[in-house]
Amino acid sequence: MEPNEAQELQEHAEHGSHESALRPVAFTMSVLAVLVAVTTVLGHRTHTEAVLDQTRAAVEQNRATDQWGEYQAKKNRAYDTQLTSELMKVAPLADKESAAKLTRGYAEHQAKWANDLNEVEASAREEEKKVKEFERDVDAAEARADRFDLAEALLEIGLVITSVTLLTRSRIYWYLGLVFSALGVASVVSAFFLK
Image (cartoon, rainbow, N blue to C red):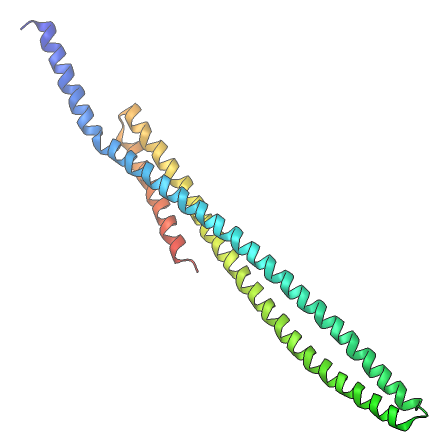
C-alpha cells in the first residue's frame, strides 16, 4: 500500500466518523422539520376556527340587532295604542257602545304588545348571550393560534440553528437549536391547555 492510499483511507475513515457523529444532528433536523409542519397546520386550522367563530358572532349580532329592531317597533306600536286609548278616555265618543268596544280592543292590543315585547326582549337577550359566547371562542382561538405561531417560529429557529452544526461541526449549535426547539414544543403544548 502506498502512503498516498493510506492517507486517503485515513481521511475516509475520519470523514465517516464525522458523518456518524452528525447523524443525531441530521435526525434532529428531520424531527424538527416534521414538528414545524404539524405546528403550521395546527396554527392555520386554529386561525380558521377563529375566523369562523368571528363570522358566527357577526351573524348572531345581526340577529340580535334585528330582534332589538323588532322590539323597538313593537314598543312604538304599544305606545301608539296607549296614547290612542288615553285619548279616547279624554274625548269620549257619542256612541257609548262603540267606544266601549274600541276601548276593549285597545286594551287587548296593549296586552298583546306587552306580551310580545317580553318575548322579543328575551329572544334578543338570548342572541346577545350567543354573541358573547362566540366572542369568547374567538378570543380563545386567537390565543391558541398565537401560541402555535410562536411555536412555529421557535421550531424554525431551532431547525436553522441546528443545521449550522452541519456546516461548522460544532455541537454548541445543535444544543442551542435543541433549546429553541424545546421552547417551541412547550408553546405547542401550552396552546392545548388554553381555554
